[in-house]
Length: 409
Image (cartoon, rainbow, N blue to C red; front, side, top):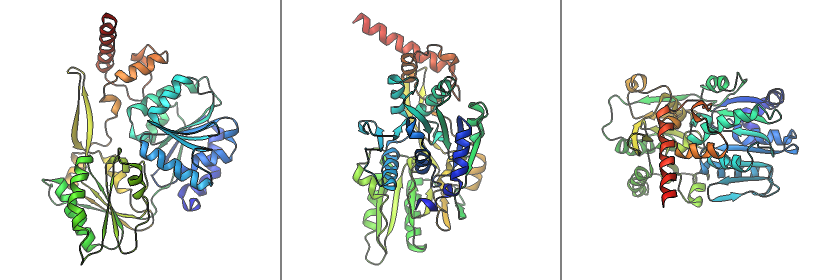
């Protein structure tokens, strides 16, 4: 199965580039095989004899899923040579040489081992997600690379914005992996939808009744919307005169047994409908998806430093995210993406790229982490995108006030 992935034909060339350079930026769409295959290639090339290989992921669900897939491909038990480390669950041992770990947990690794001496390779996967932990991680790894020349660093991205990562890492080479092999038909609505939840449910029913066989992936903004859509579609999909619909929700806090259901083959004569949040945009590949429904919205957490409060806002996605959603199809056959917004909205109202979390979130946790690591001049810390100065200042003031309060009590 791994020999059918686009990365397979580029294996020797990729290994050579990694051997010749300390830092490499790898660009490849989800499904190209970069997450599962690159650590295996490096393991077979002998890098694990020099130290561990760590691959970071922004989402815990993807971390566990990918580690399980790699262990299965290598024919070994999960938790031995291959393991994962997510919040509240550590499936590794002293034998583990390939570790899939969330970016937040890898930041904790820095506190125990600031020089990453036990690692030979660090792969920051899904760097385009630009989570807060990933951005801080990039800054720390850049500093370490200067005095740890034997540490190989791979920055993996699924978008074409790789030049930004290359410039940040002092002109690191960019290695591109082909992704989709079949064209994708993009369909827009003629007029804006008043209720994107109802429009998405209606589109699922329309596809189920009129389109050929193939599973459906629908994007929603959060768990609440997924549960509402699931309640509508479940009884509808059990009709006598139509094919069965298997409804599969997908969000971060979903129990593990329900998560694995999304990756099981669809029974003959039925159609699987995956109701997902943006987790399924890039971090996970679900086989059998032929249709994508994109309402064009996502939930974004924004922090107001003057009020000291977080707010969760429903906003338009960026063009880059819209492209990632449409790329979920076209892997094994012709696919279709139904965008529940107009072509004018896509061209004129959507930004080219999303705003990184580091420019929107409360940085108190970042300030604490960096100070623990001995980095005190935060205004000059080399972030890939500098957060607003007042956000850092406000975070430090909050921490100082908290420490003063604790000392008085």
